[in-house]
Figure 1 (cartoon, rainbow, N blue to C red):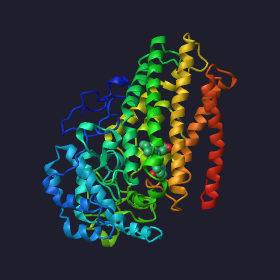
Figure 2: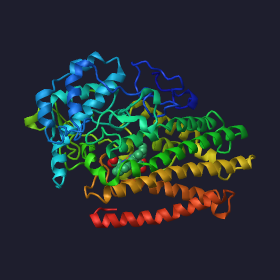
Figure 3: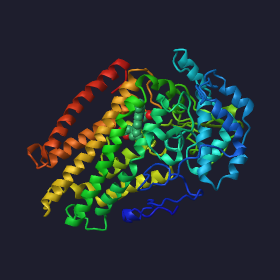
Figure 4: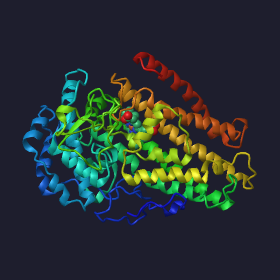
Length: 521
Ligand code: HEM
């Protein structure tokens, strides 16, 4: 992969793949493209090289319900002893594949499944008994810790389960290769609970994410076209778009709108493909090892002392952050680490829209969590998102698009941009509102555990971003004169009624949950 272009380079010059996508295994699996969007450029391997047969054997025997339907190691709470007894340290074998990143990514996925299952097995047992999660194991044995760190170094991931690199986007196979990526043809490669059955809620949860991201190619293509139309190499006056460029911008926004509409439609299928009542049982295994009561001191990675995959040592005085600090008795045994858990918050669809639309988030500690989440993703996704943000900022895309207080000759074109801009914002609102409903129905009503898998506070974090979008829409609609007619039409008037209603109900809901749970709003 080429190095990143400087941020003043036109968007078309960012190394975004177009078909035919390269199949070269020495390239990173996750490279943004206009066809597969944020999915890996090749389907993930579902079988491991023979040297890893011990790992494969554990993974196949691991789920609560195995592929044959019989109870697996997690059903009998015997994964821990199996890892101790039957899994050798295969770090040297990982190195043999360091030039085949497609395989190393499969190994990263698989070690991350064993790591999370191993650490959280005691919490699963407590949960099944109807108790609170209690404490997890807090030492990751070296035969898991060393190879996952090595894979993470090679791939530039964190050495803990990630959304794209392991749990969701690198965790599917095609039941029949000739039938492609149709939903019914997708199967999970790895699962914790009953996910080997494609009709289970665990499988549905993961597969709906994949099915949504399947439509991210046109979103990327639309975003690139919109940015390209506003390239900073044009005059930098907000009103400087020519009629032709405005037309290009409108086409880009319309493509984004089409893709987001499809993505939101698929999102709605979550309710039936993964039942709200089943979520909390497989969720136990996807918690992170920071900001969680189960891991008050993170996890000691045995046999791991120094690696580019580890975060920099925390200052000793920083008692909140125990990264890399092992206590006296542990020194010489390994390194204590903390990472966020896998979460859709590490998906790139919404951050792409946030960055392109320049949605301003409030300066709150909750927004800091949003920023932190954005480091948990494949490096090419991260670079692309940062680049979109910088580019949109330099190009002043929002100013050019909505052109407030400027004389624009192409009045119809401008009205269309404003309409499309608000419609795209509305799709982000719709995503975040549906998502808030998921959080309420799948989590808040089912458990009092205060933090989500990624470590964010469950009642206040999602509303922080949803409120920002609702606020942005309200301000923009007023600024372009929507309230006074503004030429934006009935569709947007209706949407804005929904926005006003949602603002009120969201505030009341959050207040209610905060009061019930003693959380500061
Ligand atoms: C039952 C379904 C779902 C539930 C219960 C759920 C739950 C959550 C929770 C609790 C968070 C807060 C972050 C954290 O983990 O600490 C989150 C964030 C997020 N999830 Fe989901 N999620 C679901 C489905 C999805 C799907 C299908 C996607 C699609 C990619 C997705 C994308 C996101 C995004 C983008 C965020 C960050 C939100 C923002 O920026 O405002 N989630 N999710």
